[in-house]
Amino acid sequence: QVQLVESGGGLAQAGASLRLSCAASGPTNTTYAMGWFRQAPGNEREVVACITKGGQSTYLPESVKGRFSISRDNDKNTAYLQMGSLKPEDTAVYYCVARSANYCYVSERFYDYWGHGTQVTVSS
Picture 1 (cartoon, rainbow, N blue to C red):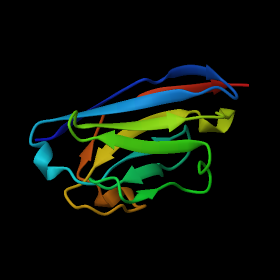
Picture 2: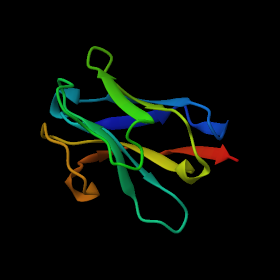
Picture 3: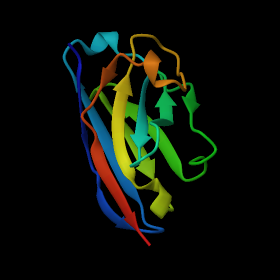
Picture 4: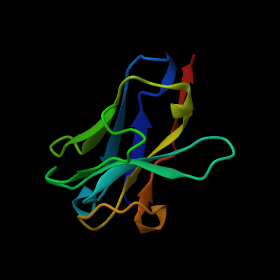
C-alpha cells in the first residue's frame, strides 16, 4: 500500500510563501500522477495542482495559477507544492494525492492514494 506523508504546512501571513512536500513510500512504482487537493471548513475538496510522473504535464486551476507551482523528484519519491502570494482564502487542509495512472484529473474520485493532510493557515 502506498503511503503519502505531507509536511511543510503551518501559519503564514498574506503575501508570504510556503512549500509543501509529499513523500511517498511503499510500492511507489504504482504511483504516476501526483497532486494536491485542499479543503476549507464548510467547502468541498478541490484540486490545487497535479503533475504527471515525468513532469511533462501539470494542471493548476485558475484560482492558484501564477501563484502556486507543482514539481516532483522521482528519485526521492517526493512531490512539492510551492505556494506564493498566499491569501487568507488559501487557508485549508492540503492533501497529497496519487493515482495509478499517468493522467491528471480534477475530480478527487480518480485518486487512489491520499495523505492525512497538513493545515495551512494564512492570516491577513
